[in-house]
Structure formats: C-alpha cells, structure tokens
Length: 350
Picture 1: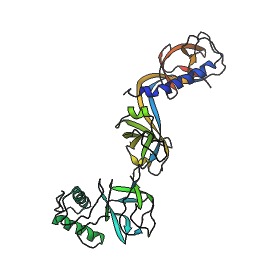
Picture 2: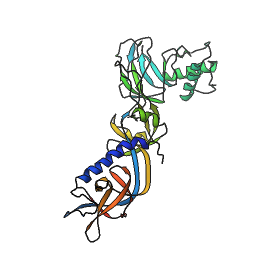
Picture 3: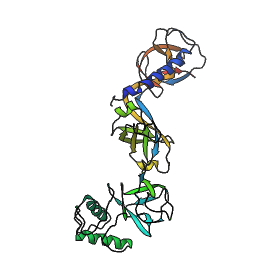
Picture 4: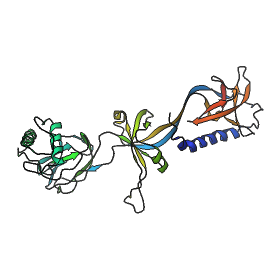
C-alpha cells in the first residue's frame, strides 16, 4: 500500500495520540508499576487485524458543472423540465415550432451544413452523429459533405417529421457532451427570444466533488482508488478522475475558487435517488496486516513518557503492562512491543 500521503495524516495521528493521553492522564495512577483499583472494569480484547490509516475528505454528490445550451434565432415555443433526461437524437427544446435536437459532439456547430459547403470537422461530427443514430448506411465519416451525407440527412429529417431539405441549419442541432444529459436549469419562458441560452444541462450520473487543501491538491493524483461513504453509511468503491487546483477568480472581488477533486463511483447506480448530499471520501494512506490492535482509550500514560495498558488476567487480577505503540487510526492503536497477545482483555476508559 502506498505511503505517499502519510504526511497528510500526521496531524490526525497526533490528535488521536493526544486523545489517548488525555484519557490516560485522567486515570488516578502515576506509575506503570502500580495496579489500578477498580471493581468492575470495562474490557475489550486485543485483536489481530489489518489496520488502515485513511485520509478523510468532505465531499458532496454532484452532477458536475452545468453547461449552457447556445442560443439561436427565433422564438422559444417548447421547453423541457428541470431534471428531465434527454438522450441524443431527442428534442432539447423547441423554436418556432421546430425541435432542437441533441447530438453527440465535442464542439459547437457554427454554420449551416449542406451541399456545397467547405470541408470541415463540423461535417465529420454531423456524419458521426448520423451514424450513431442509425443513419450511417454507405456513409464515409470524414470532413466532406457528399451526396450520401445529404441523403442521410434527408432520411433523418423524414424520421423526425421535418421538411426533407438535406440541410442542417445552424441551431437545428446542439452538440452535447454525452449520450444523454440531465436538464439542470431552464432560464427561458415560452415566447422568449431564443437568442440567449434557454437552458443548461449536466451529466446524468452523480459523482463526488471533494474539498482539498492546496497541499492535498498537489499530492493526490487522478487514478487514486478511494472509498466513498454515502449518507446512510454504505461504503462504495470509487476513483479520483480529475484534480482542480483552484485559484480561479470568482464573482466576488478578491476571492478565488478552492481546490477540489472529482471522484467517480465505480457503480453510479448506488447513488441514484440520493440527490446532492454530503458524503465522505476515504483515501487509504498506509496499511498494516496482522497488527495487534487495542482501542486508543486503553492507553495509560506513564511517568517516564511511555505508555501502558491494563490487562485483566485469567484469575481476574489487573496487571499493568508497558507497551510500545505504532500506527494509530480510527481510534485504534497498534501495539508493537510489550507482554500483550491477541485475545487478552484490556481495560478501557468507560
């Protein structure tokens, strides 16, 4: 297991040690040689287990950044609802009684596409969209708008119930970033000019956006395997897909964006229906197999600056045993030295 991030957890470990010491110094004993006096001590068993030290990040489920749909000429005559899921080939909204269709593409369209136009990557994008929608018969996907391209456009227009012009006018289609999108917000009203963006969309899958410090943003890298703890306590595997170092200006003067990480769930379906809720992201930074572990609250600080634990032996007597400690995580501590074995009953603070 990588220890790259171990330095990030140092403050956590110090706090946990401090917590253990705090409990210990409240005990009425001053030396590891003394035997504590208690009538009915609370005990737990020392155990052999895998002890993992995690970096814990705060995050929120999110559909990602919203993307504004570009405006066009005409009047808005039909709109979707916020939360609607639109697949490629379907209507995003309506202008002048004609549908504006979503197609898969990475760049916006900027001109009418029809016979006689110059070659260009927008033609290739249109041809790929036609093929994806089932209208790719005999179509060569390249930068040239050919007679075959025109015929495929007409076939598509016929399927949509539109005039079969063979021309895709600017604004008739909108390139979206996925095979389906979620309507994030609708800013237009019926009858408004379509010249400004009428709506925005996001991904349909929930992901996690986790807050980072500047140091964490430099240390954590895309591809890091993590665990996301959902609001009901369910743990689900995920991975970091992108790091935003922040530092970009915001609308407030003098403020900049904070560093964050995009985390994609291995199975996005586990988050469906949860909405945009707060979650935890756990990044394992170190792991020790077969560690002898006791609760931090079992530690007793000794006068020589060390630690001990109180062990209830077979006949019920309490013996104080000096120990050495190792990794601390999740309020548990690894014991690396001392007369302690798995299965021993150790006294913990009530």
